[in-house]
Each structure stands twice: as C-alpha cells, then as structure tokens.
Image (tube, rainbow, N blue to C red; front, side):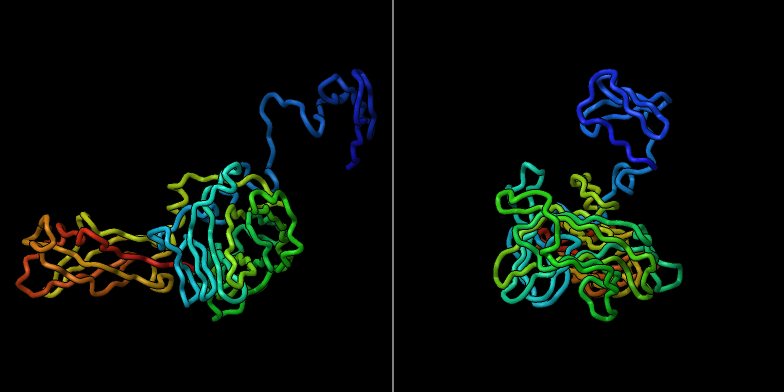
Length: 382
C-alpha cells in the first residue's frame, strides 16, 4: 500500500496525486476523486457512523485492562490503614496483588496523581533486597486437564504494560505460571525487561513516573501444562525504601491508552472471585442441624472457582451466637458456638459450627455473629 505524503500546509483547492487518485484540499480535509476522504493527522471532524474492526488491536471499549484492582482501591485483607508485614510470601493487603516474603505492604491514600484520577497507591517496602509485586491473570483451562489455554494472549499478539511508580523498577516480567509466588512449577518466561529499558510516558509528577513496555507473545507458545495464568511481576529495589505504585494496566496493542476506570462494584466482584470476606454479624443463615453440630452453606465464588483444588483456605474468626432459636440483643444472653470446620461440597462452601450439647436449642435459620468481628474468608487466589 502506498504511503500518502500530503503537503503539510495546503492551500484551498491544492491537489495531490498518489496511486492514480487525485486529492483536493477543501480547507478541512483532503477529498479524493472517489468516495473516500482523509483527515489531517491532528484536528478535523468525522460525521455519520464510523465502522472499525478494533482499536489498538483490542476491543473498542470496556475490559481492555487485564489487571484487576489496578487503582489499588480494594484491600479486603487490610481492615485499617495500618500496613501489614508478613514473613511469608503471598497475598496480604491490596486485593489481587502478591508479594515476596518479609515485605510490608498496604493501600494508602496519596493525592500526588489526583490530576490523573488516582488517589490510592500500593505502598511496599522490604528491609533487604527487592520488593516483588505480582498479579496472576487467570487463563481458561481445558476440560479435565491441567493444561491452560492462552486466552487472549495468542501467538504474536502485543500487550502493553503501563503503571505509575515513585521508583524505577529493576525489572518487569511476564510469564506463564502455576501460581503467584510458588515454586512447584518453573515459570515459563515470555519476556523480562530491565527497568532501564522501560519507556517513560509521563513525569515525574510529584515524584511519580509513568512507565510502559510492549510485550510480544511468541509465535510458538511454550508448553503450558500445570500453569494457571499469565504472571506479571514487577521487581522494585527497596532495601528499606518505600515503594509507591498505582495505575497498573495490561492491554492489547502497542499503545498505552488512558487508564480504564471500571465501576467500583465491578472491580470488587472481580476481586471476590479469588478472595472474599463474609461478615456474620446480623446475618440469618440457612443450614441443616445434626445431633452435634450445624452446617451452614454459603457460596462465595462461582462454581468454576469453588472446588477442592482451587480453594486454598477457608478460615473463620469469632463466634456464632444463638438463644432458643434466636439471637438475643446482648452477647451474655446467647450461647456461643465456635466455627469448627469448613470444606467444599457440591460446589458450595460448607461451614460447620458446633452445638455445645445435644440439648442446645439451635435453629440454624436464626443465628448471627457476636456483634464485633465474626468473619469467614474464602481464598482461591492463583
């Protein structure tokens, strides 16, 4: 296809010919002696319907960003503004983001990027070495198989990562992986780019820089047996220095487009596919009683995620209270029943709470929490 080199500053009625087509500048656009018209690179106006197959290699609008909670607004594991330090690697504070061991992390308020629409950042620090921040992007799986499909990450497709940070990363890596932090299966690295090779889009803005890099999925995909998703891992040098980052986006195509703002309810639902906290206070349950216990059944995830192989942990804290088939107003007037076990049955989470004796009057439909902090968590993170 011929390249059209229109004159930069045309006069009205000036003509330009290319490949047998004569173009005339009408003061607004180049009009061809055919049914086509062309706009200048900047400015101009289109009227009527415009039909295009894609935008930047992806959908025209909505759900371009493969990262969940990229604005760092949701933090189900972090009940207050206090940062969380964990000796083990895994998910500790901001939803959908995992960290290496001995890292202090949390969501904090920061208005440095308010003119770009960000008021929350992920804060992370580590006394020695780098802070590794990871998100696993779930991939579809073959039926009755450990083989994951590539999902949208098809051969030769391009994917652009962009994010804000107050520190230049040491590296940014994508790979097909089994889990966010586990080592049971070696990650199949697609590309690892040094921080110095990241392109700067914008900044510094109040200490933050906007970085980007475009990855190309190889023409021949690696064997993805025993992998669950595409892992994005950004490693920041820390050694005690606080890292702040937000605005994570991974989208199709070679261009970093403006951050995709999804409704907060939608973002929460996406997070709760992998982790959810259920507060028992003032909740009426449904269940079945036996001679020694009561079974409460509740679903936290879609059945696709809620299986014995995908749920990592079902943990309860606090107590369940009841009195004569009801829950009285004061805790002292109620019988305390501990949460004793949990599991998966028929695609639902099964929570078991104890009757203290076979003579306890207990109606599983009218019990509630202890009025303070009775919760149950479902963890199916990758």
